[in-house]
Image 1 (cartoon, one colour):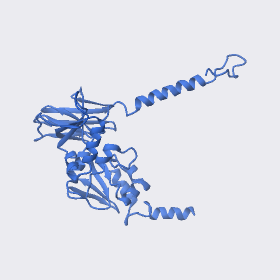
Image 2 (cartoon, one colour; image 1 turned 135 degrees about the vertical axis):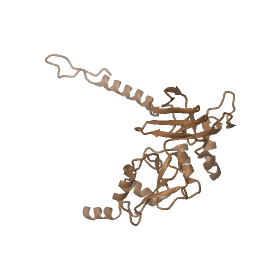
Image 3 (tube, one colour; image 1 turned 120 degrees about the horizontal axis):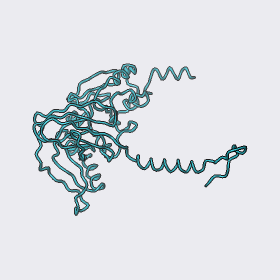
Image 4 (cartoon, helix red, strand yellow; image 1 turned 60 degrees about the horizontal axis):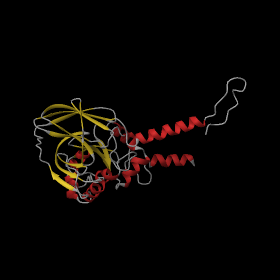
Length: 310
C-alpha cells in the first residue's frame, strides 16, 4: 500500500543500502552549510552513491558537486582524473586541492589531511588545506600534441598512482597545449624554462555566482594562477582588467601567469559549449515555424487561413 511504501521510505531513505544511523535531516543541513570548493564522493561507495541520488543529497549541497556521477558532472578526461582522488591513499588532500575539492562524503575515513565535519550515518569530511576554486602554482612542464595524442597520454597516466600524483599536484602544474607547427603527431613534453616563485604568495578568492571566478593575488615573484573550472573557448580571462589568453592545465582547468605584485584575476563565462550551434538551430526552427504559420486576411474573411507558404 501507499502507506507501507512511505513507511519503508522513511525507514530507509537511501534504499536497502541505507547506512546505519543515517540522519537525512542532519545531513541535508550539513551539506547546505558548505562554503567554498567542491563536494566529492566515490562512485565505488554504493551506500554513499545511493544516498546522494535516491535521497537527493547532491541537491542539498551548497558546494558544487565534483564527482563523476552527479548531474552535469565531469566526463571524459575530467572523469579519468576526478575519479582518482582516492581518499584512502596517502596524498589525497593534495590531489583534492588540485581538483578544487574541499569536502567529501564517505562511509569510511580518508587518509590524513582531512577533518571530520559531521557524521550521521555518512561522514562529511573537510580538507584541512581548505582549497577553493582559485589557486596558485607553477607550470613545470607542457605537453604538446593533438587531441588524440593528449587524450592517450592522459588516460595512460590516470592508470598509475605515481603519474596521477604528478598530474594532480596543486603547486607543480602540467600544461596541455596544441602542437607547434611542424610537430609530428606524437606527444611532445617540454620542461618549463620561465621563472616561477610561490614563496610567500597568497590568494583571496572573491565569491561570485556560477560562471565567474575571481581572485586577488599577492606574489613576490611571477607565478601561475589556477582557475579551477573546465577550460573551453567560452571563458574570458583578465588580469587587472586586461584580457589575457589562459593556458589549460591538468586536470583541464584554466591558468594565467601574473607578475610580482598584487593583481586581480577574473574569468567569466561568455558562452557555454555548443551554445552557438544551439542558437543557430533554434533560429532556423523559429524561422521555419514562422513560415508555416497560416496567414490571415483582413475583413470578413479574416478568420479563414490561407495556404502556408511552404
